[in-house]
Image 1 (cartoon, rainbow, N blue to C red):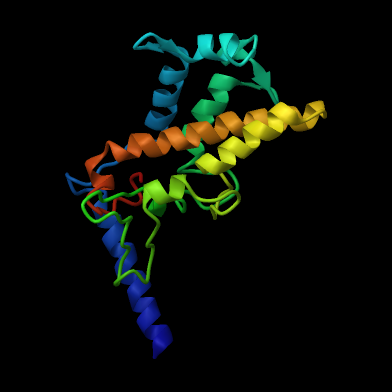
Image 2: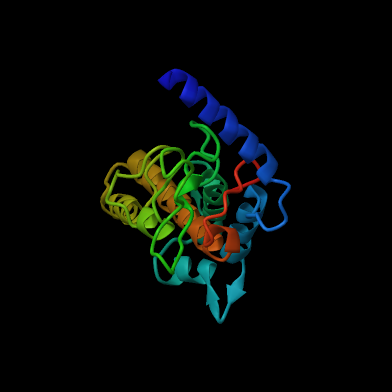
Length: 199
């Protein structure tokens, strides 16, 4: 009997999600949009701030946003971080996205379906500030993880380890930028599911 109830619940949820992409008020940003926003920020100059100048002048990264870490430039890692927060290459796409909601009136994330029994998530504010290696699934890219990658990159004497940690720093920063983008989308503040389109 329980198996039958679960099957009906999964079927109902699948139907609900498949129709949600056609509802006019339930649109998030496409993955490609997140990539482009991150790239624009990385390569642009805003209010007299340039990431390129900051990396060169303040952090001593001579190539700035074009510096290579693990065979990709800083701006490319930031761009990929925008994609990977929704679509990590080693896990089911959008599984992290239930943690991209924040209702500021209730200080809560996505409440899920069936009274939180299916697809509920953390508030994006909480998700972004998880302790080191606490985010799951899809890797560890909270603010605390980002700081840890950066610390490891700065203190490592092993060049390969240093390169990998700088790459993770900028990728992780790109994933955090994705969460900031999502905070600007009404569907992410209203608890509106928009799975299958984008989250």
